[in-house]
Image (tube, rainbow over all chains, first blue to last red; front, side):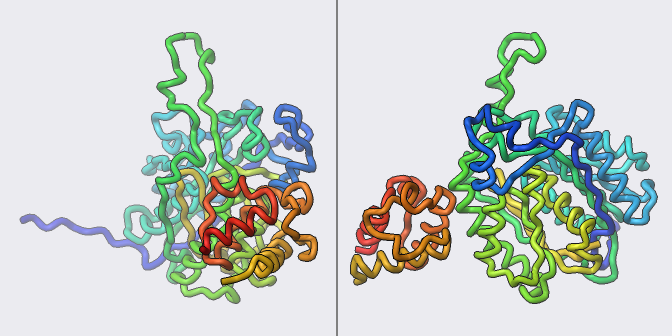
Length: 337
Length: 81
């Protein structure tokens, strides 16, 4: 038998830099209430959301990703040619093939980096960070760009009271590279496919394309969500997953500086924090109030904002946890870049 | 076996913690939504806390039938029985 040479990676991995792109159009609750027969007060009470950002025609999945990535690469102190793998987490790049990661890698000017998309909905970014950490440590790539990006407005039903006021658009990116000490803790992740229907694309593409060949004449398969069971799962089951991620990383609640949960809904964030008994010293990301729920983009957007506003400092210990359709989830402790 | 009043009092404490409602207002004839201003998300939190406190299971499908404090207490009594 011929011996195959194995790969050798870095001893550890860390997040080297973060970047964000927030669409330019800020949409207040007053713009969404009429179509769902609701009120600003009701939306704020149910979700804590005051405004969200919705992408304009020029702000495509690719465009937002490239903007966020350029910032992340620059802050990492790297040249784009050093990025040798690009992982893009999204569920709203509606051109299914090829992966948008290849176009992003090309537009950024990478030297033919490996590039692929992953589909894990709202938990996609934390899945991506876990993959990137393993890729760097295994030696399959040295610097991995992880992008979480959504243009959920394309699949949003503006008359759906359960979703129209929640979802939004944006992109966040992180560069993961080698490190002498662990900067990304072990991932705690999983799925519960029994609850497949709780958050989902309503129709299969094949059911809505129809026979009419006129572009745009079909019915867009919209996103649906059953709010209360999702709230229950996210607020309580996910609090336990967050604690597990701390335990596996050997980090106590007292040592935690920053908590960055998926920005699904302020009520979920508050319930998780209560359920986890987070000490008052832990700063909690609350980007959802202004940004809405941007699915795969929410964790990097929220952490980026905390860094920008001085709530998170380089070297701080942060718990990232993301959860959503699948149901699927992923959590890990990281060192803030 | 806890009495109806004991269950009501424990439930009142939970409603107070979750939604900030005065525990004395949480009486059997009170509607969670109309009288106590406990919305459906807070109701989920109340239910999860009640499950832990009383060692019962209250499925999502059942929660919408628990309109009054009395409904919830009666459900817990049955589930414990």
